[in-house]
Length: 222
Image (cartoon, rainbow, N blue to C red):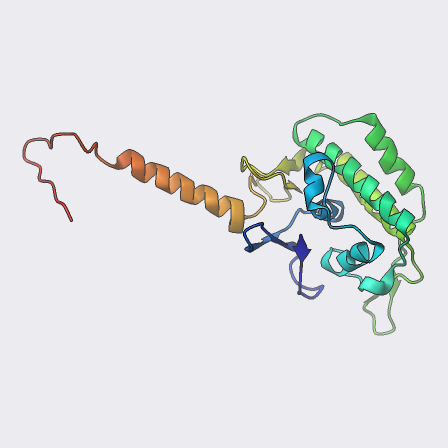
């Protein structure tokens, strides 16, 4: 469901593909919310992308972490933990988008994951960021959980939104200054909404086919 070919210094965001084969840039505004694009609970299970540890490793360079796929050693058990964390975060983010705190059990899931040591940042000899080696899946899951806790308890907790499109479930944090972001992406849902609104205005402005023109007006046909 995700793909990205950009370098770390490019604007953050993931290139998502639609069932129809088109793609669009989606920036959820937080590392932990980027994980939600890999699948989820319930109906979202049909989008599951994390079937093997290598799938989570391949997600690393696409995310805000920007790590090489081989930077973190991930076991099958750690992959399962990442999926458990992701599903809990889906429920919590959706609940927060609707003004509630979410299930206590999901808060406990985040706390358990965050209790492990996180990824440790490293600096390379040339002064650039280096992969946090050695590292494992438990550290990755802890880093994601800590990011989620910081988001849910921080100043942007009330800015977590669901896309305004009726058929889109993507969740993002609105970091814009006015706080009026409605769409997952202007490329996709925002543009489609504009097209629908324009079409509706044109249809409402079209004269009734059976109406009689007012005196002094002419009608034209093509």
